[in-house]
Image 1 (cartoon, rainbow, N blue to C red):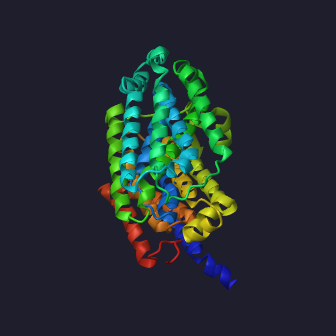
Image 2: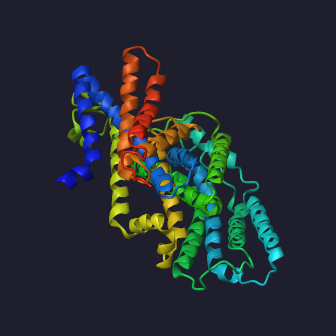
Image 3: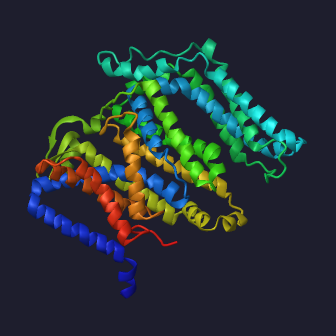
Length: 495
């Protein structure tokens, strides 16, 4: 019994503190105000956890200071919003991206032979830089003349073209002028993959054996590229004419895949060489965040857009309870006498599902075991024949995918705009620090504490006519209190 109390003392103390505050808040605020504020706090907490869950993996487990994590939150929101509103932009650039990825993967089996080339050491750097430069130039040629800005603006037109949402959907280059561009993107990816392998660098340990999975991946990417070229104009119409609820689910998947791809690309090209240089990680990720923010503003202007909610959460009226909502799909639901938006309940559910999935992955799967072991003793795991580099890339991509899922999940709730990731990234770092490095359970508790602090802070500020800055400062105050009591966080382990 003593071991139980000792092991779970932090959980019990946090639960008791929340219970005491709940009783006090209920008695002083009344049922209606308390329930509404609590649900709002849980909504904010779920959004904070969506960002913090990825940071828990990347920052807490891998010790990578990724200041571009909020960027993936923002990019996921924009890509999902673009797909849901008018996917012309995504289908227009998809063949080039897929062909480029096929080229990158096709270069992997060649790494053994590339590193064994007989190139004098003094010329290896020149060869690598030359191949990189040519690869970049070929990549630029593949997109040269593509009206990317015009493709991006189709979503803006669709917002105002309620009478005919398909009016501006065909803005693609004719196939006769487009077919060669994926080939250029394929060559660009292949050249960059060869350059990254290090031609002539015999010090690199590269296996001669080539996994059949790589060739299957390349083949699948090429087939999808070919199909995407043919359906560039017809696919957007098919997407917009499908059931809106299904389109919303696909938008969630698009956001996740965008985040995963962006995270993997960042880790392989920029983060991997800087694992032993934390300060350089800060500078590089800050630069990435700045570049993507400017790119987003270039494509979609520095404006705020509201993504419409799917029909599942937008039917007029109020459901009497949750059981009734499953039949009526109303915009609002009666929760203990409080009229509350049904989509906010979906955000809470999404956060809970994310926590459950992350817990299962980390605790009950072989991959989770490899992650934990690789963080504790990378050399020992590599000695067992496990490629820790690929594991860390997967972890980084997974963390970015979780953030992107949070972004598209929040898009129908908060405005989609270039600065949306900054505030959530700051709160995500605070959540990770409060919960403890590498503790997904601690991140969930920290997210709930911060969400509740913001919601009840806003309530008190409104009731007593105080400055809204008080509720914003409450999150930092909570972090300071936790660090004074437990410097390693609520559930962090002492080094």
